[in-house]
Image 1 (tube, one colour):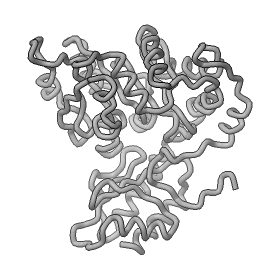
Image 2 (cartoon, rainbow, N blue to C red; image 1 turned 180 degrees about the vertical axis):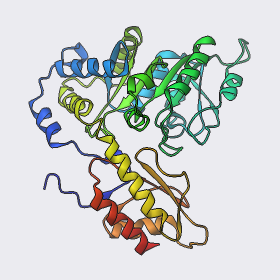
Image 3 (cartoon, rainbow, N blue to C red; image 1 turned 120 degrees about the vertical axis):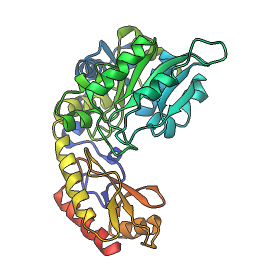
Length: 348
């Protein structure tokens, strides 16, 4: 019963459970007090993460939201501003934490359909040195970009933004919650995608299947500063090696198989696109996210469709009044994809 799931759960890849190998590693993990830097498993994870990102050091944190908050607090002061997209996760889905806890102003500019920020918009957004203006300290990019369709952002574009930021005296933070999905989709390495960024965060608990945690990577000086901020936020997790053990398995064993999730997403999208009343409104998926919409002529509400699907043991995410988001992951197989397509065809 341990790995028997009552629902086909497509709400997010955050619903993934640890694999049997992870559970074994967690049970056998060597632990210590991480606040004292004495947990060998956490230390190993942080070193491995830094190597994967091409940075000097890493810091294990409880969540991606905490990691993004710490990265902003470490690189900004009260009254400064961080420039980000209007569809970015930090702006939309992190509770306004950078303002609530850091007094940092979110300067938003439009995300393009491909998840990028227009370079001209970025150049215009950077403030002049003027006592009337907040100081522009940071640019935040997201890769993959969730709300733009789970799209991967190229290393070339990120370098262009990094060059602009550094020329103008700003830093670049990369919210790479799903950066390994981007790397697999673009047939490159996460290290290359993260290279232009001063700091990068990635999640272990989404497609990589670890139960908890994210890692921030950057210079040793910044990570040292972030370690203090993590403590201030209550993020010192003591014998966290039990969690870090699953993260090590995630990095060593789960990255390459993300291509399977992308393949399943394409199969799902192709099948749903054939159903009268549904259409792909962000195009064919490039990674593991499928965004579909109900055509206006369909009188059903998305909530009604969601409940009908739930009665068929299928869980889906709602974006707004006409749109769904479906996310494939390790615990979704080909049989599940076929069942979801069949259920939608019966419900719509």
